[in-house]
Image: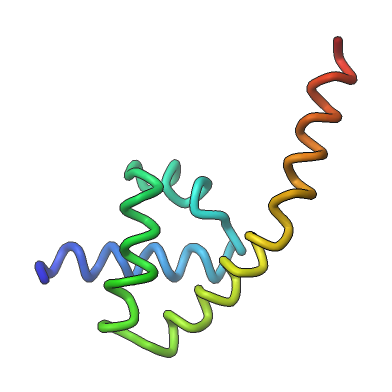
Length: 82
């Protein structure tokens, strides 16, 4: 694996841990696709640093569990202004 990919994976992990960010938010900040962020944290990160990978996995699992709530709030806001 190239050095810059490892660095990016670690930076992405640090950002997700510090901000409790979603994959979509992280992708926007780093200027990469959601697929790249997901691959970095699910496939590459465990090989680089398994402890950090477990922290990120916990945050992403929590975000996934709350996803339906955020979607409902967005829909409510969308139709409130109509």
